[in-house]
Image (cartoon, rainbow, N blue to C red; front, side, top):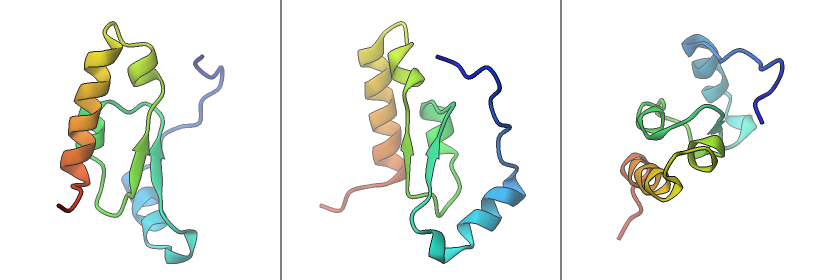
Length: 79
């Protein structure tokens, strides 16, 4: 369910600052993501996690397929 008081999104400057901190380890994007947002994530983000993009989609199978394609384009798996 949507949060009653969601935190604001990080600004581009805040994201760059977080990604510049190597001791934080891998940074994963979470919240409000769809296939287009996954494709637009900045360099340095290690992954994405989604819930509503699939769970609340009119066609969850199609949404999952679209997200998988976006993830595979964003983070290609070596052959």
